[in-house]
Amino acid sequence: MQTHFSLAQLADPAIRDVEKEIRTCVHCGFCLATCPTYVLLGDERDSPRGRIYLIKEMLEGGRAATAVVTRHIDRCLSCFSCVTACPSGVNYRKLLDHARVHIEQTFARPITDKLARWWLAKVLPHPRLFRLALIGARALRVSMRAVPAAWKSNRLMAMLDSLPLRVYGRSRFEQGRIVTVNGQRHGRVALLGGCVQHALAPQINEATVRLLNRHGIEVVVVPGGKCCGALAHHLGREHEARQQAEVNIRGWTDAAEVEGFDAILVNASGCGDMVKHYDSLFAHAPERSSDIAERAAHVVSLTCDISEYLHELGIERTGEFKEIAVAYHPACALQHGQRVVDQPRSLLMRTGFKVVDVPEGHLCCGSAGTYSLLQPELAGQLAVRKATAIHGTKADMIVTGNIGCMVQIARVSHLPVVHTVELLDWATGGPRPVALGNHSILDPTVL
Image (cartoon, rainbow, N blue to C red; front, side):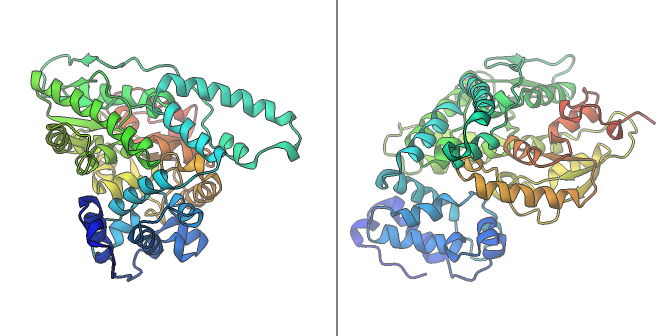
């Protein structure tokens, strides 16, 4: 694609990177069928190549973002299915990230939009605040039943419907813990404690630690290792994202100097995708210290999704189980962001489950971090589309590797939804996943 950036603009290394990616796009259209919003809306401006053109027009003239551009950029899920499909290798992530920051700096959003985005950025990264917010949302949802329909905000009601209203207790594996193994130690890893997942499903971290310990792996939850920064990053709040990322980077690298890690493990694919791109986050950060870029690169080299590590570890089931058909939903951040495709399926099959692939598996379920709250209508349509595809497989349960996908799909599906690591823990001697409840069909009695 032809560009017309000025020499003064191209003196900025960030703009040079953007200009290079825009020029790489040849408008071939391979991305169209992979883009969830284009599939739903059929509007070229809601496709990757359409958004690239909007970004080009906005940045070339150094213009402030308009309401039209903002609307179409906001509708992007950051699923990066287009990146997987692109034959030219356009780094759409880089373009989208820069556009979001530019919008945040130049566009005057409506006050309700500003408040919603501020609330998400300030509350979701903190598990205690998020738990309190969920309790408050549950009470508000009940009280809104008495409010006349004409007085209700459609957006508020949609957001309340999108929020997971079940609140679990805190995980036994808190920040700063070192969980040792009984017997010979075969490895040592750091685990991202997380924020939203820590509040919504602490049993995922517990299953992760149990599974790793059972295979001789010592687990360290480094103090301060909470939010990865993805939530702020997707909202265009780049400074906050860097602050949160730097806490993790310094915590992990300082701890690694005392006693090294074999890997830094992440069991929420959205967070893993963020951590694996920490080096890009600090590539053009003017406020970075002299060593943060080097530390970020080291963290990236150590980081892997839990399924990648377990696949190399070689776990096996502990007995012969009745065959259970599981519909594997590949989270976008895992298959498109991290390019981790085969390992989760292989692990599930190795431990005795019958893995059923989901039609349109490349399309997003609509979770996408804060997307389900900020774009509830589109997110809801994608959730129903995903659940319908899954139900057609006749699977017994749904398994995925991302907390956002779990919550999103569980809202519209009658099937239990569990994390990959919970099933692997169960198959190798751990307890039955909480989400399975009393489903008799899911009894893995040893034959």
